[in-house]
Length: 242
Length: 296
Ligand SMILES: Nc1ncnc2c1ncn2[C@@H]1O[C@H](COP(=O)(O)OP(=O)(O)O)[C@@H](O)[C@H]1O
Ligand SMILES: [Mg+2]
Image (cartoon, rainbow over all chains, first blue to last red; front, side):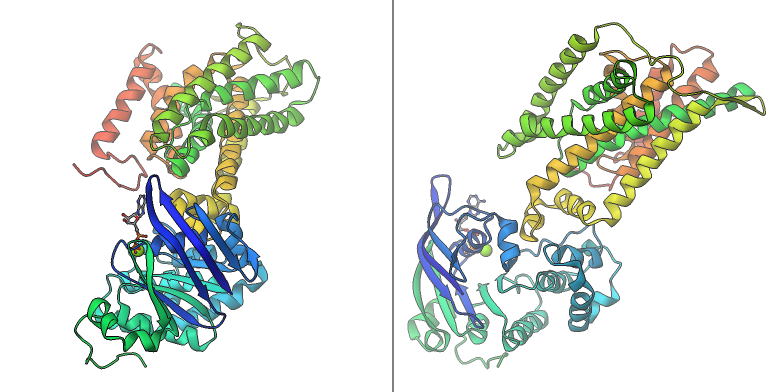
């Protein structure tokens, strides 16, 4: 579905992402893990068109989208739920969801709202509240629901568990698991590598702007080098997500 | 007592024009955090173009008004394209945009001077048929009522547009976060251009109403409203549309009340601006400002 070849992104003289190549197959969850500052968000932003690609090509469903503008990519079905959520704080929950469906035909709207409100009852409850008054966890739910309103073909999820309490982290990964079961294609960025690998079929490890390792998630999880470097010492901890 | 009542009514009329001028001003500020200092020049050109359409092209004011308003809106697109869009990627775009908008104001004013001359001009007699009513000792003309109605209608339509429509919501989204709006699929550059179109159209409409109200138009008439408009949007709370409407009325009323109380117009502007400072002492973010203050 997505194929990235030799992508380089620079901020002025700094190359934050260097010559990376990756692939996401339709209907799978692929994760991109690595330490803070590795270039994960930059990669997603290049896929969304928010930052330009200095070199390389991005193919989506066989089409070269390297030079499309961000809103054209949303129309194509590439939707990012950004790090830090970026909810529209001064707009209501309902209006945030409406903005999620900005590129969708109005006829879909009712069914779309009904579906996300069924999945996230808290958003139905707080429909008319300003998004800025929601708790961090609720804002993350809203950000995910808003992304789903766009009916993504490819969902780019940037650190959805960042800054959340452990119970909420579990909720978020449960949602990712549910989306995967529903056939949603996802490119998941996480620092929480263990949890990310558990919901993914394939994974890329990024460091200093480069992809240093890749493989089936299962295989990476049992690789002693990966465990010691990226998953920490908690290798015997029971998996909280099946 | 009647003089006071009369002045209050006059304050309402002029305040509605200030409000209309200020909503356009504050709209661009709310979206871009940039002051468009050419807004007053668009106001002037709107009025002068309407005058030209009536006087030279022989149109009725009912046709000239929407055409000149549209023309002012197109000036807004030009402003965005020439003075703001090229600077948007710069880190200092707020300051550089301010300067380039001053440059555009100077150019617009020079164009107005070249086309219409430096003298004060007025709409021909009979442009609007004027009825005069005396109600409880207060004189009201149909022109004044028309001005308030048109200004109020435009402000209500704008408010509903921003609150309810798809484009209105996109404008608010861009105002909150360009990056978030972009990721949601909003064509941010298009929305910014639309914002300038709407803002300048409203500014031009205010210029036409102002010219009709005072029965005088001049290439430098924007100067008289420029500072007041700024005061009104600061008073109302930067970026707040209802705040600009309220601020316009408050400013218009405090002006005429000063005249009524002191019996002279010498102190009019001084007192109006003093009221501004007094309100800002109590509410630093303005009447309806969001209260977002810079940390000390
Ligand atoms: N807007 C920006 N301007 C300049 N440098 C940036 C910008 N955004 C990120 N960077 C730099 O690019 C590198 C990668 O950042 P990022 O993609 O956010 O990493 P990650 O998401 O993996 O934590 C970091 O060194 C960061 O400082
Ligand atoms: Mg990041």
